Image (cartoon, rainbow, N blue to C red; front, top):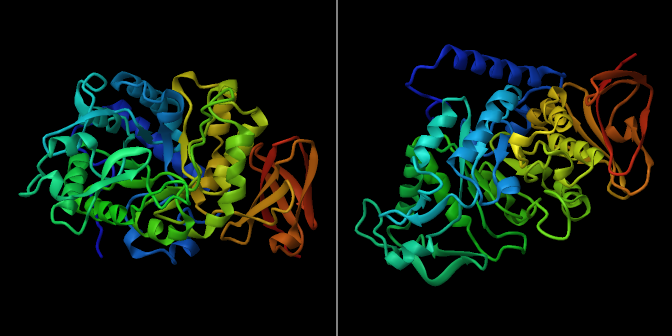
Length: 463
């Protein structure tokens, strides 16, 4: 199947000299991140060879990088607050590969004449297309939030379906909602007009300039979301392809691993857990014990499904606002280390207008970002203890290795070359500090504080 699409960022307006320089610098920055260490192909050739042809679009060839509104702003955002986030990304983060500005729940408050969600005019007086243009003019990409099915307002209005003789009552299941948490009506794709409704939405989003869709409340959700949206996702995949614009389709949340092959074939990424945000009984955006630690337990189950075109999503990176993140400096480094070595999307949750200088260093370490963009998810040697070694071959005979102390007291963590499948001595480089640590004969040990980590690159030294 041919999925050729227009090139990303295509535009007809003339760029200013300043914009041209900024975009060139950004591209150079991304390339530098990719080759900062010799990890191998960004595309991850071995993984790519095994992926379904349907996923091969210009979208998500590497894990997406950017920002999402939910963690820091919740529903309290406007066109101007989103532009403020975009300005910081353009000025301080785009050179490192961060591109997406994604607005989450709270952007829409009604439906249009064809039953499609429409923006809140109080928040977006100039419309969504205007905001997308603002971002595109700065070399950024624009993402939006949806849920499957038909909004309750469209059901109440019995809206007509664009380009068809059908109305909403013709295409929904009687009395069937999508999930207990969402009030949308469930589409019945055996009925004429249902697929056309989805295609109408996709065409509209493409006309607005949308580059990314987060589709929330998608099930089966590992027992956590009581819905079956497999056909919705198939239809959205087809609708996006037909719309003629490359659009990343991300699924949320807690997707069922039993349906991993479906998510892999018809989407570009999927949340493997619930929300990373801490909503009660803690201080800050997230919490290590309640929210973050779950990812260490569950990520390895999904490793084999990630690759170019579709990635395991560990949720937002809650780094950027210092103590307001809710996790310690050591925990922040460990979060960034896990997300990077698992090739997770790097979507920042912090308020970019309040960037902490030390956090910014974590978010812009080129060697660590190169690990994420290499797209080679790691596996742990063992999860029998709280002191763990995770590793991933770099494709050139070397190895990327993360050491984690998930325990509550200081402890040594040892990477054994034999456990990693290496023979003989290996040169060790610390990617966080950019330091070569010399050649070790058969292992490397670091004593780590609680919840601390190291990220290493090993290159065999053959006799």
